[in-house]
Length: 304
Image 1 (cartoon, one colour):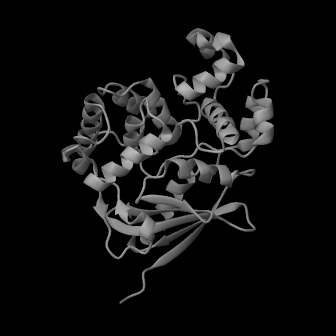
Image 2 (image 1 turned 180 degrees about the horizontal axis):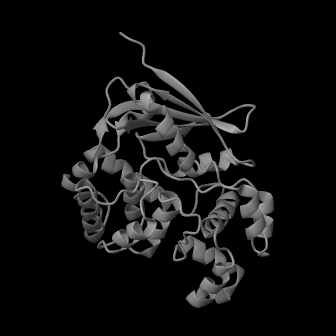
Image 3 (image 1 turned 120 degrees about the horizontal axis):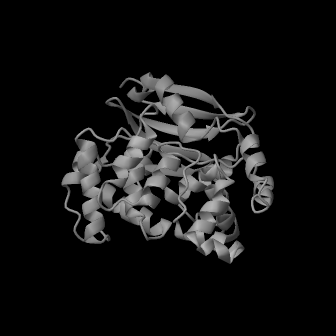
């Protein structure tokens, strides 16, 4: 039996880079069977232009870079996958500039000092992320992960002879998710309809969520026009899939509660919008700092 092709990529990042918190974010939202965080590594089964493989991402022990290991036929697309991973792991964000800007606000000065290398984790697949965002509407991070795991079992594809048992499932394709019976999946009927309506649109070729050159404004508008997808979902997707550093999920319940606790006047939408204007063009990082502070205190993944 021929040995699977293996390629290693060194992906440099702008220092500082908080790898432990990036891993914590992914671990708290990992889709069971599809991706896993263990032993300081992010792992998943991947597919790129019809070629399958396995991905593992770790931090280099000495250099300021991540190390991506690609195994299988997908490794022939190493250059393109490396560029995709640089976006997914937010490697080129100018962390010092972001901290300096947000640190002008007394709310964020201690947060940026404590965690200067915080990043906005992206996603391997924009389609997967929107699925998770729809599922995650008005439920906890843990509950969303449980339901997404059920979706994988119903509509995903088990991979035979996969080298890593914890990632031996392929996430459902848009067509498969659009067609599968989702009765008793644990979601309200309207949310199921929204999820499958979105999947049908993607299966039909709409919404190039993973195209870094796609028009963000057009994608935002297209998503917002879909039944069951509101501003929170759109902004969350803009943060993580569209890589908009200024995306602002201002209606996120955990985010709002944290900001109101700091200043009760933030309960008024106009007051919150006015305060957040000063955080432009890095409002996505502002949201991550708030979520991260809550997660640090709770010792778990909270928010988003």
